[in-house]
Amino acid sequence: MSARTATAAATALKPLKLITRMMPQRHLPAGRIPVLPGIRLPAPVGPLKGSSPDATLGRIGSLEVRLARTVGEVKRAQELRYQVFYEEMSAIADAKTLLTRRDADAFDAICDHILVLDHDAMETKPFGKSRPKIVGTYRVLRQSVADRFDGFYTANEYDLAPLFARKPDLEFLELGRSCVLPPYRTKRTVELLWHGIWTYVLRHRIDVMIGCASLEGTDPRRLALPLSFLHHTAGASAEWAVRALPGRYVDMNRMGKESLDMRQALHALPPLVKGYLRLGAMIGDGAVVDHQFGTTDVCVIMPVAQLSQRHVNYYGADAGRHAA
Image (tube, rainbow, N blue to C red; front, side):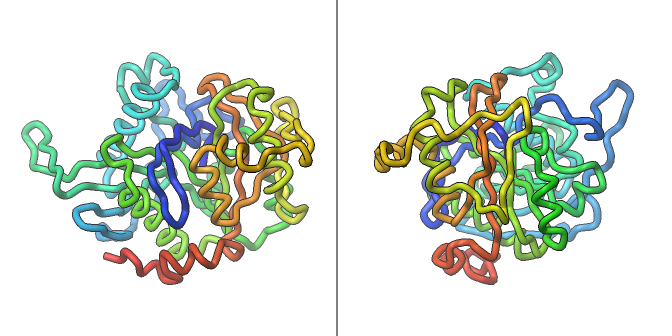
């Protein structure tokens, strides 16, 4: 997940619309694949290196969800992200991003990229053959891969080390950089995107999904209601506790539980966050303000074994609902 969420909606069992910004391009912690002049990034891991080119994750009608197969498809996903995050939403682009018109960072090279393609909307590149349009994307990073490159991007905001120390035998998956083009922000598209994630989780035997989700705005006082609601009703247990980094920590306990208007608080939450809560997600301790993207972020922890059985049954314990 990430620290920039641009939501137009999502629920878990019955997702509606979705634009999510989860891992924005910001400063990288020490040891994180630096982007320096003359330095080539490592070859992408996952579908671009050793995975089956037929790694389809699911279908609904003309829509297919699958992993990116080429570097070119990753670039097309980055172009989609730029269109949503920088042109439609409020992200601030640096000179390189403006020049390339792609939302890209060093982590793209080690992530898997889940794509939703519309086979009824074909594009023809100059002097090339037609190809289905990429209408949605999600970026995922497995811990077994992240450990080879010094960890997750979420560690830029939250101290994950104590959680990993308590759960050394579990495989974590970080979610981020998710977005859907405006005409495709429908239940069908987002449901297929989530089906792709669930299929990926099963194929790679993921134990825990983790990342950041965002609330619009950078003034925690104005977000006192939703932040306090999350603190009082969805705070992670000691077993799964994650805390914002010192110096970035923003107290979420801004209103007493007895003074919360629960209905109003739910209404104030981004649809994506409500979807995660329906799945059974927990929220880490402390929020983080991201001034570059105009958001306040919270850390989401979703152990697969604790996911809502209702939602697991909906997509299928074997991800068979929309299997190709």
